[in-house]
Length: 203
Image 1 (cartoon, rainbow, N blue to C red):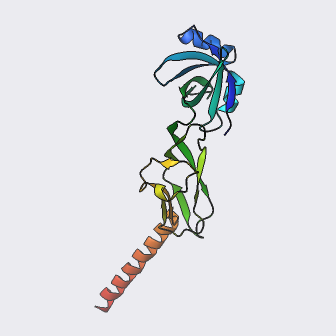
Image 2: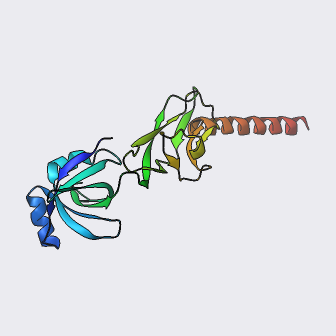
Image 3: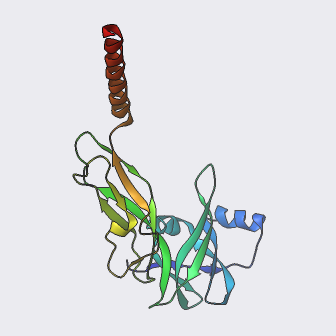
């Protein structure tokens, strides 16, 4: 993904009151840190930032005081009720540097007829170049039968990415619907009881 450019402003006011004033001005408080530097408190443009954070693992180009810094999001604090962004933590990165990120698991394909699938891991942890971070990985379940599962080590990663999650960790499991399994169990139990009753009668 190409850099997402955001024009930042240095922030000199702190505390809840200052943060509320910043948000009322349609801006977002943020902090920029990393590589042994002192944390830099900034504000970001509200609308542009809200659109930008929809991209998972986006690389940001933060323009501040005639200089530009590359960064990725480490944490977003949102209002619990409204879901609006209250604060963002940004991590400084450099070209050629590899960092660890979580990527979303997208399941594609259809498992065998009469089966359903369960996503055991919503994300996988990988290491990749800061300038080429994947947004997601695809896991195909096409034609998989009940009892099948896909582990992290079986997932095809984007070029340049290295898996950090335990390769034996389950990502997707395929099974029969529980209702059908229960019905089959009841049918088997009923057949067993009928057989026992027949044996008792004969005895």
